[in-house]
Length: 506
Image (tube, rainbow, N blue to C red; front, side, top):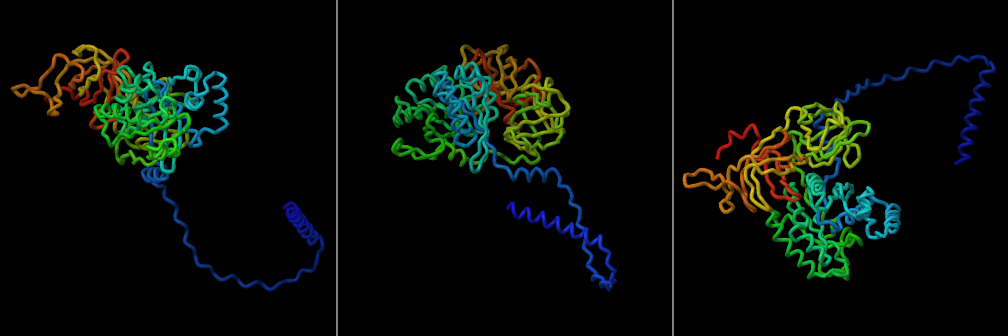
């Protein structure tokens, strides 16, 4: 290759030198006969200028090139192995390389925490690594043959349930991690454990499908015992059904987060001969799409968090509509018009995003201090409602005493957190008939108070105005959870916003 290059260069130099010699020697000019004119060429039509495609066509083309995005959240009692399974999945899908994992393993061994190293792929700060407890919702991304996944690792400790609710609000699929180890499942499932509360909260958040991953099956106290597996399934199934999960929407499977058994590859029959179902990742890949056609729907995105990085960034899950780069939106309740100057999906730049995508948006015309979690990005011509009072249907799940007008608690609605007060109990729901209870005259029964397991219709007063929608129009923004003294006491759905309260009839 070097020789041929040198010969080419030298021949070029010689040719140039020869041309210079010809110019220096004057030879008599010989007039050549004029060449015949070239035949006329047929006139070629000028190419038509390409017309710019409308934004709707651009969005549709960009959408067709992308894999279907699914948001999954790991929930469950503390120390069930959520972060370990999440970290192992990131390693198996190539998102964390072997060298990084070996570094985590060395550092964990120095701290006498050898089995924690996989969780460090998601538990990134020192507090989480020192205590072995997830505090904030960890985030990761991975892909399979058919889908792209956003992995959310929710905290399991009861002190951080509010953070867990924020993670659940962004998810399409819930992964309830259960420890099969003797004593650990019972601690999480018995009254006061987080297994029960997390299953209730994930249903309230609107998660469509629940996978129960029974972890630590390789523990010496379990040893892939089918009897122990069946015991857990039989205790969980009635509870999940009671909380509204249909049998078709739940899936049980055994696994080991530490060894990776049944995460990517099928279980070895010599290890577990009684389970022959798909491994975890293959099952996720085979799930149907959870997206619906959002053509013509108004845009809604509840803001989960905000930060500053050469501009104002907001993060959240799109619950309705589509958004494109350079599009103008309105942020509520500020009613400020902003422009999307940058759009990131899984930390990669994109031209558009649609319903279900977990996105980061860089906004122009607003400062970071003017944005807070719970605010909502809306279409310019269709804003969400702002209200401080609303009518709701509420199911009371766990109460120490009774609820009556004047009772105060904390409400979690999409990503907004606000104090609310029961203003009036306007009706009682009859579980047998599925309708409001009425007296002999046909008027709605207005209870003076409500007790555990009752379903009531009530008017609630918020301490401040919030972005709110009815459950019928925007389910993701019309579900809420009520908590008091660190426990979930009720779940409910918004029926009417404040300006419509007085038109409601019995």
